[in-house]
Amino acid sequence: MSAPVDKIQQLETIEIDIAAAIQSSAHALTELSKDKPSIKQVELHSSNFLKKLESVENNLVEQLKYLAQVSTGHPHEGSSYSGLKDAHMAYHRLEHVKSRLAELDKMKSEHIMLHTRSTPAHEPVHTVQRETSQHDMDTH
Image 1 (cartoon, rainbow, N blue to C red):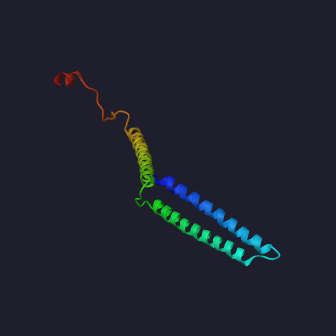
Image 2 (image 1 turned 90 degrees about the horizontal axis):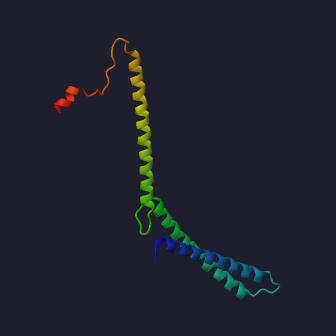
Image 3 (image 1 turned 135 degrees about the vertical axis):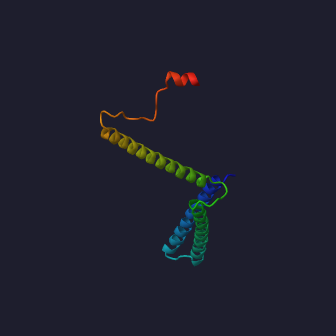
């Protein structure tokens, strides 16, 4: 069975144990509320309550250990969390690079605009691109 399904089944078992512990404590309290409680019954229900409570505690500790392992990115069987986290972080890095490139492009455009305004009207502005002349086409 896959790890996520196992984890869900373990959580369901914990839930059942919690219900059983509550039921045992209710039986013990019901017995204690009687005019003549049976100490043997109270002890039996109290003992069942404590056993279930210990089981719940141990199983919850195991679940918490698993969650701690998953959240810190340690490799573990049956989870894609680490890979998803890496992909998510890579996406954010990509978006950051895109925004920085857009900022640099804007700065470049502003610089070019300032440069073209400061160039006197009688001087031509040189551009990087040039038109291909007929002579260039004949030589190729």
